[in-house]
Image 1 (tube, one colour):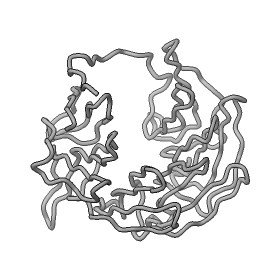
Image 2 (cartoon, one colour):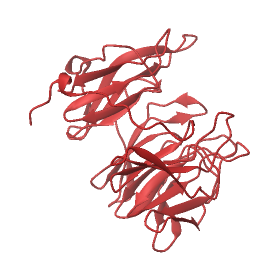
Image 3 (tube, helix red, strand yellow):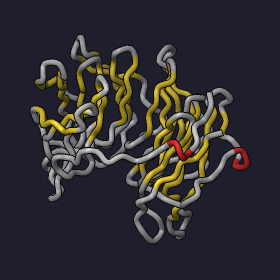
Image 4 (cartoon, one colour):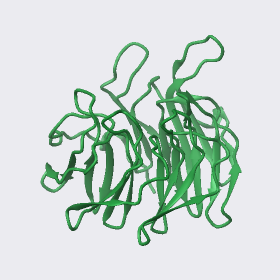
Amino acid sequence: MAVPSANEFHWQSLARLPTGRVYHSLSEVGGQMYMLGGCDAAGRPCPGLELYSPEGDRWISLPPMPTPRAGAAVAVLGKQILVVGGVGEDQSPLKVVEIYNTEEGRWRKRSSLREALMGVSITVKDGRALAVGGMGADLLPRSTLQQYDLRKDMWALLPPMPTPRYDANTHLLGNKVYVAGGRQCKRPLKAFEVYDTETRSWTTLPTMPCKRSYGGVIWDASRRLCLLGGLRQGGGHQSSKFTKNVNIFDTNQGVWLKSEETVAMKTKRADFAAAFLRGRMIVAGGLGAEFTFNTSRINLLK
């Protein structure tokens, strides 16, 4: 497949959000985007649910979540959006689980988590949600792996991860759930592990090349994990530094590519948006060493 020229991409201004917010969750169902919860300008978790319609380029307010929350884990189960954990109005983790039916336009409460958690990572396998890790009310990371069955409305515990963590990147490839990075007590991790849903067992993979936070994470069409930029944690008394390095893990070979086999980003940055589109990695915005970016870059992924 021919990779398009960077000149073929262009930016388009879309309808503004109804309300400004951060730490919200996004989900796509049937070609439409849903924005759930988040914190308002005062830092309070809110219950808002909005739908963006690409056809009309407009936002539509929908019935709010029963429980205001920010930073929730979200999974799509058919035409329904499952909302798990997050941070509540008292700034503490939540155990509440709710589901929104996009066809009926209404919310229902579902079976709660076994304990209140924030920073849960989630993916879907065969119509069941797999919730990985999280941070409890005691601020400690968890190694829990939980499976939610929508038909039975039941959570089941699966074998725990070798490394407790929260805010990890979770991705499903075939029968395997890859869990990369994450945090322990605000410190970034290099841990990289995979769970086999058939054998119900965990395998430890080669660790990530460096500890980093606020980087971009992309899985490309060749089943490779790409880690872009971010804030690289210094050792000892060294301060963290912005980086433009790109690290790629090939799941077919089970190895991280050597630095000479990858191409660094043009600009050091962290906390940016990243996506894989038509054979190219796209990064936009973010923070640099001295200023905030309002620029974007389009790089060819080889």
